[in-house]
Image 1 (cartoon, one colour):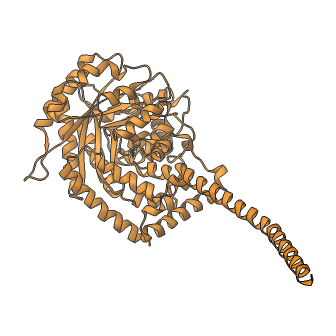
Image 2 (cartoon, rainbow, N blue to C red):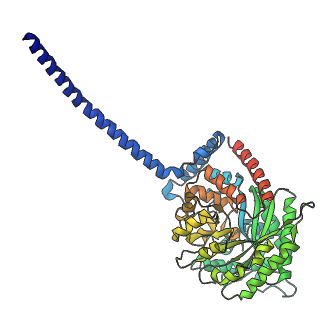
Image 3 (tube, helix red, strand yellow):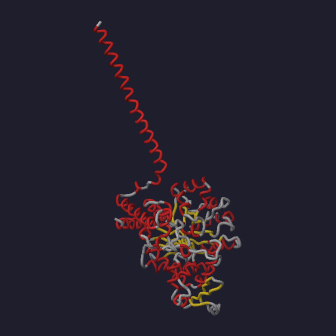
Length: 500
């Protein structure tokens, strides 16, 4: 009996122990479930944001350089009193705190590969242009209705207008200060103008005389190329305006080539190529565009890059039809012309300007894609067409993004809202370009990389990829492109070493 009673007591004790253990284990299990939920949430959160973490693509040295880049950026933001007060419209022509910062100096020094969208002879900033023409006695400025019109002496036209003064004299006596000319001849202010587009057209008229003096134009191109070399740019593809006048096209193309040869003496690896461009102006006869295209195909064979006597290379590599997007001819008007097999047989590639617009009804991007454009200039309103974004990505159609130009021309007042960051994060091929630096930038291309760091939160790996893209998606043939890629890699390694 005692034995039976002892067994019952033992069994009861065991049951109590099991119950107690169960009660004690319940809170522990709940804690584990909580940690699991937290870990799962954090994993999903990292998956959603992992495209911003590109540090895994960097070497140890590059990670240290990344830290310096981040430090320079924070230093600049702090100098403005924080993110809230930083000027995200990137006024690089106005604010010396931007262009004098350590971050800007880093962007200047960075090997940037190529500028694939430099317009005519506007690659030289207005500040440097004024330095170039300030000593000339044949350049006068006419002060008319509060605006400054430039005049080059031309014996066929006759004397200068009565109300004009020599630029050199006006700058010396203070009547024409650098600041006044910068305000008048760039987009850094919109004084007396309703919008940037109106002023840009006025500025072009005011300074068009510069293009009439071939000696001056050659000097501008030479200084432009030397500046690119100083800014660590290895390749420049220039949109050169062509008309149906074959001889005029020939002269300007040779002039650019001569300036390129001069600059190449300083840097033998520096390369320039031409993309002939006609205007899509609705008032321009389509036969003019056809004539420009035919001239480009002809001059491609006639004018070569002969800087290397042992191997002449094509100097003219592509064709474009550009101009104000909204209100002018759409690319659809030129489909038949641009689909001609003669273009492909000639070796010219199509680098088409499209999407420099905020309008949903502007569908030039669709035509550029269907026409097989190797690259597309701007692509601002591509964000309105999600399916087309994926098509561009799948087919590797590169977008020439011009942040400073887009901002100065009023397409966005805050570069943080520029759609290019969406394209970059989506994996679309993107390159940074300067476009119309004379009117919009302190320094061609350096400003655009600077803006990408400050406004799009891009890291060193992103900047590296953008620079590599500029060579990968250039119009160079494989052999030339590979040589340039090797040079860039060496320059990049040296740049990273210097940042240690």
